[in-house]
Length: 296
Image (cartoon, rainbow, N blue to C red; front, top):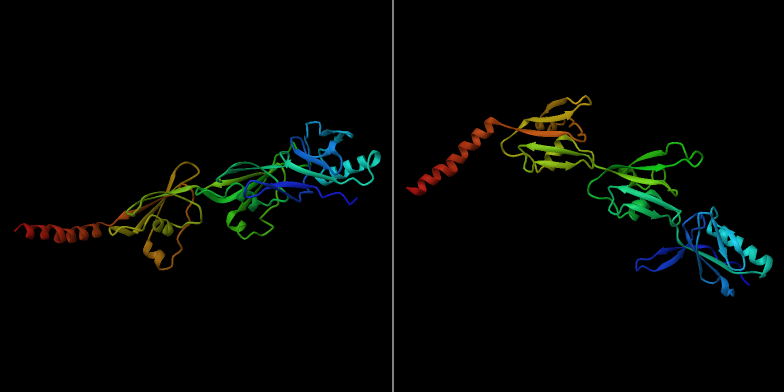
């Protein structure tokens, strides 16, 4: 007979069917559901077994077989050797993992489908975000991977914070390979408020680096009566007091750096008294005098 078939794990296809994918590097654990098949052995054909908390499954002919802590490939070899010892010369053994509950990660935060996700083969951080449906509109600029230390389970978990802009480059140093038990948390963006003489006053998500000047553009631009030299930034200090800074859009246009906003900042564009007067006069002559002449 030929050598044993490779161990595999089933991965859902787009149509909902399942096809085998190599996952020999993933260890089995309590809660995993496996399917054992041995060619020409009816008692061990398409036999499903869920690994109990004890870690050992019970199979016909073989009795108790320890499965927890082994990869599917290693368990396949164990079963094959046990069969060789008593029953067959060269058994063909296949193991499929239909549910890998012990090998899960949890994705939370600003993703479209938060919750647990099975590790099917090697999964990197970008893969996990895709498995969770991608980011929502309120996603911030960072994601953290929280991992318990295998050498010290009672020690505090280690959190690695990664910039989402850097993750887009798919570099291995930031696109971490995940392990079972990892928690991936996408930070929700903070927000800032733009008010005063802008077209669309309101709150905006701080999803990317945003300056005071860019904030006024995001708010639809400034109105005709806006005072370009009276743009105030209100920022709360750690002690609870409010810091107020005044900037000029004219200076920004002439090359002066525009400060970057922080979460909960408030930007207010002032009104120019001179512009208000001039536009009032214009409107008077445009509408008031015109209306009078039409009545006459």
